[in-house]
Image (cartoon, rainbow, N blue to C red):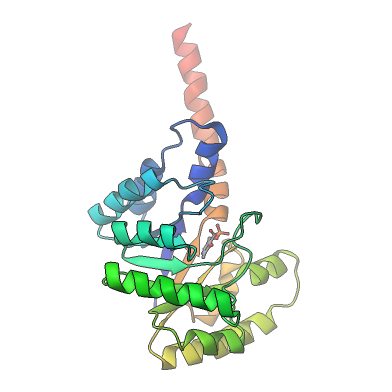
Length: 249
Ligand code: PXP
């Protein structure tokens, strides 16, 4: 199995929002990512709109359609945001927990928490009613209890939160406990016929043990890709501008 690569381009929008300019263009980022062979684009429309804006969703989805690739729209369960997802009808919605004060999504959905579960059930119902062709994944931890809870919900896939794994990888800590959890979660999720995805905090290096294990069908990766892209492009862009200055003299 060759796993799919979903590229999260939120961080391009973060850079744009930092200055309130129209660049770097999120649509251009979507086009570049798809041209380069990404299997999917992931964007997170947060309630606080800190990076992706409402007006970004249609153009990004447009590029996905041109390349015949899915748009994976990450959202919290707030009814207003779910309504926006229903209007755009992305191929996938990934339901995630959201806290305004967090720097990024800090963990998986707390499915054992009554109010969280109730909000989630409402969101799933809203999506099923208004955008029935949209497939839904739940962003969750791989712990046994959470996996069992997820199986009670009508979703197509789970996306396992790999943030703690990725952090421990960078700190050279043991990883076996994560790989064991992923193996067990995978067996249960696949026995139920659902998709097994992963995301958060992954780099080209922390991806290696997961690829060797060969369980995840899809990886959604953003921060490292966008960060590394700076170095892939910096020399070229500076050389071009330097040339431009010399040509003007
Ligand atoms: N998957 C989910 C559900 C996320 O919330 C994020 C971060 O927005 C990602 C994947 C991508 O994480 P990163 O940007 O750390 O690669």
